[in-house]
Every structure is written in structure tokens, then in C-alpha cells.
Length: 97
Image (cartoon, rainbow, N blue to C red; front, side, top):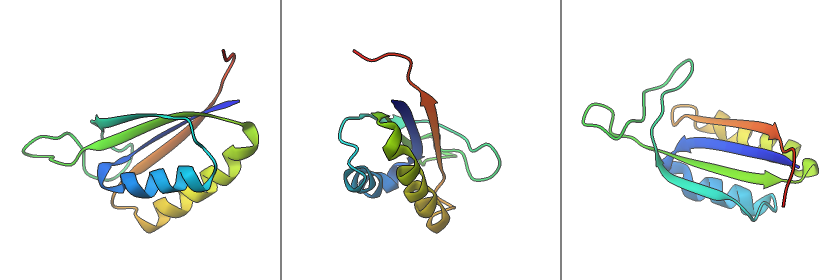
């Protein structure tokens, strides 16, 4: 089991939710309004007068076999929407209940 963390411009929420459906990733927690600043490029998303954009963040616990296809689909979206800003990370899950 892996934890899949995705943070992206909130304008992309429908596209990310569709990707999760297409990849068979049903269970997730969505944090609808998160602030952030890209590691290398892009404008901050702070919800302020100066930086009005906001992020949305999703975390999902995913079967190992679904991670590679999901990450490839996320990379494809990121290639098409580089100016929107998206980051995705995967962690090992030690235990589940």
C-alpha cells in the first residue's frame, strides 16, 4: 500500500478527480483550499491579493499496482498544464486498519 499525495491548482480539480476515477482510486481525502509555492518555477498560490490562486490537495491510500499508471497519468496532465502547477509524491504506508 502506498500514500499518493497530489497538490495542484484548484482550477484542475475536476480533471484530477476524473483521473482518480479512471485509475480506480476511489478512497481519498481532499483538502480544498491549500496554499503553496512551487519548488522551482511558477507563481505562489496563496489566496491573497498579490497571489490570488489557491491549491487543492488530495491524499489517497493506493494499492502498489495502481501507483505507476496513476503517476504516469499525472505526469501527462502536468506536461499539458505546466503553468498551473502540480506536484505528486508517493510514500510507503506502514500499516492500515
